[in-house]
Length: 138
Image 1 (cartoon, helix red, strand yellow):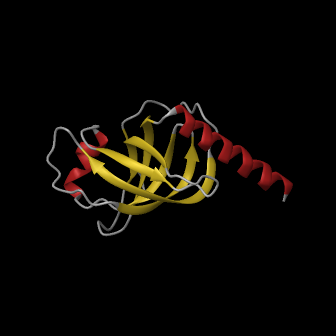
Image 2 (cartoon, helix red, strand yellow):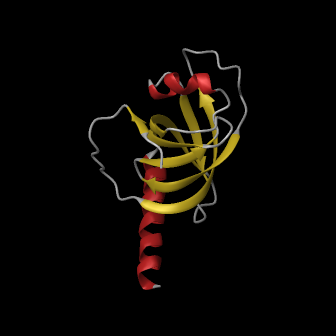
């Protein structure tokens, strides 16, 4: 496992996390940098909470990494929860990432939901609770 780059203070989790595997669509957004990229990418989340998630995602330009970690580039994320008909949409800020060996490989990014409607946060919470109840019964 590689080292991590972290801009946050010591860990203070407010939400229960769920190890999972959910498809995600995402795009990069910035008001201060002309990205020249409107493409929608596909990745996965392997860890989910109502406050953020762990994304396994590709970054089209490795030069974006400092701007991502400084909050100059955000990510628009659509979580495709199996229990919900419509995608959960959130504006996310990457807060840390694992180091990587090969730029062409997906990166592991920890992202915080900056703009997540309350109803979507509630859907995530319900999904986590249902998943944990199913796991404990099995």
